[in-house]
Image (cartoon, rainbow, N blue to C red; front, side, top):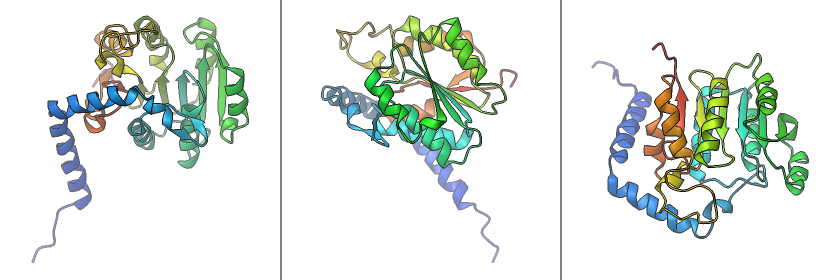
Length: 253
């Protein structure tokens, strides 16, 4: 009797890949997921979660997805725009430390780091691995400060989660996309705004047609070194980053 040549680990991941692809084609499930998101958002569902004590304001699925990407890409630098309560940067830093990534750091930018949030973040156990800058994330001064952190870094990830208007996100994409190392990701949270009812955010400057998703469409149309990792959206379904997981690739491939 010949020894079984099948690789059960490879079989598992191939079966999972096929199921994710089929799930992505299920328009009914996609519509139900979006309906659930809209209804849950009326209760500020994403505000229900913390990471190491700090509000993270994300869907749990997106948190797990970022962890998966980090495990594959091993980023020794994560750049984030938008700090809020600091849950996301605490998460990024804690994952780097848990994964044993050498010389790892998180660099975060916000136009307004509120004093009560700054106090909590600066007293957090992850703060020694975090650098925060206050100011306009698209200004030459801030971008240059962030750029200096990329020196000698092997793997860089970027997360753009500040002002969600198309104009601002597009300007961030133009300024920060080149910091991402090939193979790693640029994450665009809140692309789901494009799929919510028009006028839903009546007290915000963003809406359908003017949000991170519309900025992303402009950006990828101009670049041949970024691709939308649609498998991420297909596997998550309920997520803030609908088509917002962008992987940088070698444009010569």
